[in-house]
Length: 115
Image 1 (tube, rainbow, N blue to C red):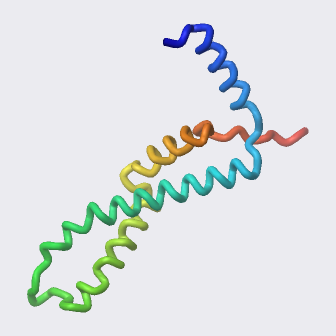
Image 2 (image 1 turned 45 degrees about the vertical axis):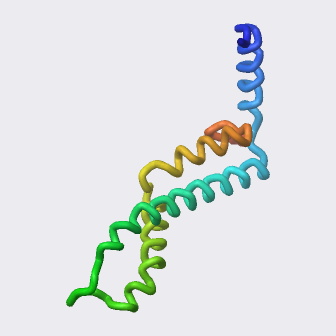
Image 3 (image 1 turned 30 degrees about the horizontal axis):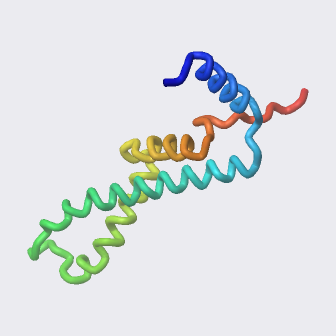
């Protein structure tokens, strides 16, 4: 088990690291992480919606073979749009965990302009 002294040292190191301004490379990495998390949520939503469309059978108002061919594209577009519109919150959780894995804080410290 870690002693309270070690935890205090870790907390102090993290506090010091959090005060350094974000570099362009870090901001680019954060953008990639956000995009990846949103893409993951879109894929998840696409897979979750797929069973809703499996029960659509042949009928008077069915799109026929053409609809079956493009159904995957439709589901993918719907999943992407849902994720862009906020989704179900999965992207935020994935992004937070990915940032932790990269040793980054949740909110970058921006450099304040000199006055």
